Length: 261
Image (cartoon, rainbow, N blue to C red; front, side, top):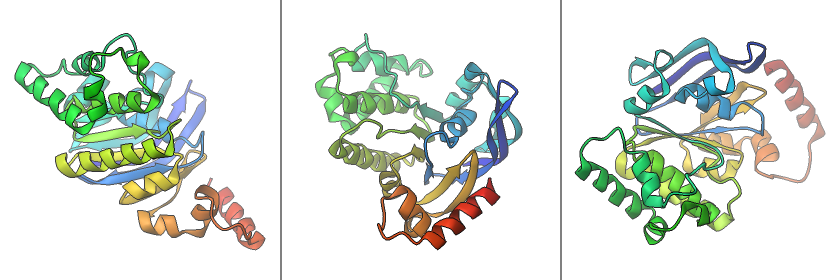
């Protein structure tokens, strides 16, 4: 469904933030993009959704195709109409509006009122907490409830793929598990493909079927989620793995990273 082929992203025509990124998300698939802060994960999502321009960034090389269409030729609203929805890091809900009004604000692409109401009912079914707080100001919701609202608002566009940027950021472990379960349910029931960007590698690898690892703007590893999880480099660096350090292996890994970068 989604294919990135050797894309490069430059900010201010000077800083090369993403270098030769290639990845694929199948129809209805669940893919994780892992990496440390500053690796280029959010930049990759913004290249897909078309939000780079507001940050003085641009895709200078490569191709992004979605459902057989060239995304780089489309403006962000057209990408949304095509089926691409992006949940930005930090939630960014409309704090002075209620959850219901937040959902309505994302429904302008739909013309039938009955369809909009069905989408709202579906969202409240997925997120019962939002239904309980439907008429409260969004600014008074908890962090977890605001994250649920941000995801629900994106789902009001009836997307084919959901780009999720750090949905676990700042949340308690129980809420992280709850949101992870809801994301899997959405994927299963509505066949919405997921591209999940996370620093919480444990959560992302529980959800994903396939994973990519980014470092310094490049993809340095990819494969089925189970194999990526079992990789000793990933276990030691991202999953808080074994405490016994094999310094020969660490030196080899660092040398390999320098070569890749």
